[in-house]
Structure formats: C-alpha cells, structure tokens
Amino acid sequence: MGNELEEQIEEVAKLIVNCKRLVVFTGAGINTESGMPDLRSPGGIWSKFNPDDLTHQKNIRDPEARRRNWQMLSIFRMVDSVEPNPAHYAITELDRMGKLDCVITQNVDGLHQKAGVPEEKVIELHGTARWVKCLSCHRRYPMEEIAKRLQAGEAKTVCSYCGGILKSATISFGEAMPAAETAEAERRSRSCDLMLVVGSSLAVYPAAYMPVYAVESGAKLAIINVGDTPMDRYATVCIAEKAGVAMSKIVERAKSKMA
Ligand code: ZN
Image (cartoon, protein in one colour):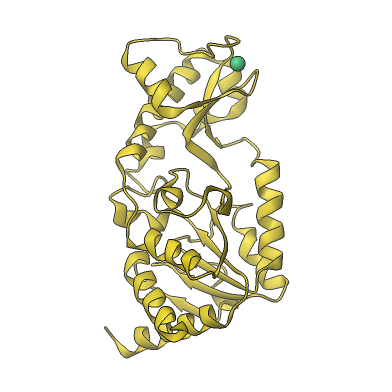
C-alpha cells in the first residue's frame, strides 16, 4: 500500500473519530465486491432491457411492458443470493461504534440491513427489490412470495387482494423518488457533520444532491470511489480505491483511535 493511500486512510479515520453525526451515502460501487455487476454499466442488467419499458406510465398502460418488468424482477431475485461484503460490514461497525446517524443508499438490494445496520437507519432512495407493491391498493408483498408464484407458473401475477398491477418496489426510470425517503435523506444530509460517500460516482440525480446538501450545511465530505465524481473538489479526502479494501482499513484505524 502506497504512502498516499495510507495518509488518506488516516485522514478519513480522524474525520470519523472527530465527527458527531455521520451519514454514509452508498451507490452501486459498493456492490462490485459482492459479485453483483453495476446495474448501469455496459453488460449490466439495464443494458438488457429497454429503459423505456420501465417507466411508470408505460407499466400502467402496456401489458407487454409489464411482462418485461416481471422478467426484470426475476433477475432482481439474484439479489437474494448476494451477500454483503467487507464494505457493508465496515459500515455496520461504524454503527456499533456509535458513529452512524444513517445510511442513505441508491441500492435496492437490502445488503446494509443484511449486514446488520438497523432497518430504521437505512434510507433507500431508489426503493427496494426485497418488496413488490400493488399499484392500486399499495399492499406490499415480500419478493420471495411473488417469486414463488412466478416459479409456479402464474403468468399474470396480480395483487391477490384487489387484482391490481404488481410492480417491484424499486423506483423505475420516469418514476418520482419516494417523497418521504427523499425528504428524510435531505434532512439527515443537512444535519450531519461528516458525509462519507462510498461507491457512488454521484451521477444520478436527485440522489446525488445529498452530498451537496451536506457540504452546503457545513459538513465535511470524504469520497471513496474508484472513479472521479463531480463532488471531488469539495471533499476533504478522495480515495480512489475499492470500497471493501478502503472501508475496512478506515474503520480499523478509527477504532484503534477510539480505544
Ligand atoms: Zn392491491
């Protein structure tokens, strides 16, 4: 490990030790070490589907688009088999150290919760693939239950309560971000004194406004991402390293300082 990386890790560890309210913001880059492809990269899930099919409006109007949405859902099921990686566990450790205000995530996989971050501390800006929702009565079904019905050959899976259209509780393109989650994420971003961005290139808005809110409100910013981000120049530290490698070292270092 180079000296520069060593210094950067030391610097982020110090920021963590000295902060009072830490918000961690995560994106797809945190998952590459879990063996899950970046959904938006070439060859990723999105590239196999026409994003136009995934708009909210089309899902309501067009049965064929809904069928494709279901195919997409069954691919999302692979989320079940994906396990958290060292980056997720390092973030959970920040919670056990009493440092974590919340995790704001662009991911829909539920891996932060699977790694042990309490449900109420995870804000999922793009929804969740762990649930399926009825567009009419808003009833929610666990993905496993719907997956079983699909596997059993049910062609037209509809809400068993009201017959309404079921859709993954993820946020499709063209669909607004969930209002309550977005407002809560903004509030937490504005009231933290340190934001740690892990594995996001901060390219997808409005999610990517969260670090902007944090910086505007006087928080320090640290970014751990393999590529550049538009917020790099506002960050106290940028670490161009894989999330798992960097986060494990950072948390280990912060713990030793707090001991
Ligand atoms: Zn329903």
